[in-house]
Structure formats: structure tokens, C-alpha cells
Length: 376
Image 1 (tube, rainbow, N blue to C red):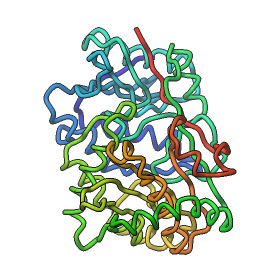
Image 2 (cartoon, helix red, strand yellow):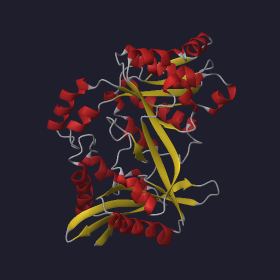
Image 3 (cartoon, rainbow, N blue to C red):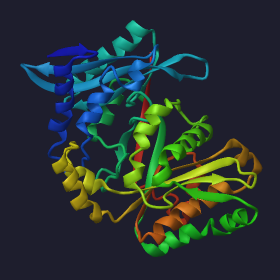
């Protein structure tokens, strides 16, 4: 077996992307990534790659001309620990079920980070940062996955553990599958929502006709509210806008909202998505006209909402205003009003207080995810 390494190479990039499709094409739950998006992320034009101080290297393991595994090793200059030490990442992981193959390609990636970049702490899986995909699923493989959910072959966890990685942080998702339970969960924040509205708090829904300006506000409030989250790093506004411009088509009125306090200060946000997994899966990783037609045909099949993200400022936390509870109510209520009786409360960190808002579902944890760390 040999391992090919490259940074920018048009043909090898195609092979790198192709392997992901080959290894997952028979998995009916898998949501294919868009090929052009992967090509962009692996190109010199990608925001991460344009930033001085960042670096990466891609690896493909082959035997007798057949691709067996792939991954990338990355140095994000902004990803540092509390002591100021650089943290590396390993992402875009795909591999056949062969621990020796996995060990060899992981060793090469670790060597790149340690010996060529002086890094002694590595997170994985993480594609550049937490914005572009990270974490392995560890539980919930039998469930219908939602867009943006970590999804991988179960044995990938074993690959990392056998290579010396240890679990460092965990998340979970909970699905509520009937109207009555959603109403019960929603009611937990209703009183607080009405109280805050009474004293002047406003909930302003993102408007597709004025999305560009509102995305700037969303970008700012996410950076403020997530600043102390585990492994959080900012991305450029340009990249954020490119990523979130799809909200113009993939959400409903009230599903994404900016929250302002009684003085008009931006204080929080909520983000609910329509689960368009069936429609996206039908596109098979392409964005051509035919693929867009397939998306349109399958879009009406979406019958589930995903409470994907929310946050409030440190000032609101210190005030104990209850804005988090009120925002939670608002997002769930908007989904109910839009006709959804199933909802996934997605990607909650194990130590997040939001679990308490789920009532009897607080410890259900249909799906779980883990980020691993290797210390040299």
C-alpha cells in the first residue's frame, strides 16, 4: 500500500472526492455532499486556504491502483488551546473497513501536523473548523439523518480510537415525533416569551428580500454568543454569507429570527430548518438543472423541522432574562404553526442547559456524536 499526498492537484482532487461517493453510494441514509462545494473547499480559492498561516495536506491511500482511504490534515492558525498552543485537525475522513489501512494513512496525517508543523494536539474529525463539518456519529445510525448532521460509517470511531485518539467532547440530538409533545415542550417558554415581548423585546424574522443585510447581523450575533464555545473560531463574513445564503430557499418565515432587547440591542437568535434531506439526497451531489428539478419534486416530502441553532449574548445570560427559553419557545412555535408535528432538537452539547427544556425527552438522546483528540 502507498499513500499519495498533495495540496492542490486537479486530478487528485477529483479522485479524492470520487472515493467518498464510491464508499457511500449504497448507503440509502447518506446525504451526498455537493461535488462543486468540495472542489471549492479543496482549491486555492477557498477562504481557509487564502488566509496566511493556515495550511493543509490531503492524503489518498492506494493499493494496486485502487483507492482505499482518504483524509486531510489541517492547521487552522486560529484554533489554539487555552495556553495558546496550536491545534491541528484531521478531516474529510473516508476509509474501507481495514484498520491497517486506517492506521497508515492516519499516521501520515499525524506526521504532517507534528513533524512539519510542530503541532502536538490534534482534533478529529474536523474539516478546517467547526463550520464546515466535524464530529463522528456514535449512536443513531438507524435513524433518518438530517442535513448538517454528522454521519459516518460506525467503524470510523474504532479507527480513531485504535490510532490513539480519545473522546474529548460529546453532543446529542433528540427527535420529538408527535404534536402533543411538541406543544408541551413549546409551552415551557411561553410565559417568558410573553413577558419579554411586554417589556419591549422584539423577534425579527429573516426576510428573504433583505437577506444580505440581515446575514451581517446574524454573523455578528453568532460570533458574540458562540465566542466561548468549544473549538469555536470565526470565519470571514464573505464565507459566512456564502454558506448561509441558502436560507433564502431552505427555510420558512419565522424559522430564523434575530432577537432585540428593549433598548434595541441585538441579543440573540434562533434557527430552525426544514428537513430537506430527501430532496437533497435526490440531487446526488450535483447542482445541474436536472438535479434542481429532482430537488423541487422531492421538496414537498419534507415532514420534519430541525431546531438547528440558537444563541444569546453573555449580557443576557448575566441578566438571567430567560431569553434562551423564550427563543426556544418561539422557534418551536413557528414550526408548529407551519404544520410540522415532528422536530429534531439538534446537536446539543452534553453540558448545555437546553436539555432541560425538553421535559420528558431531556434524556432521550436518539443520536450521539463525539470529537476526538490526540495528544503527542
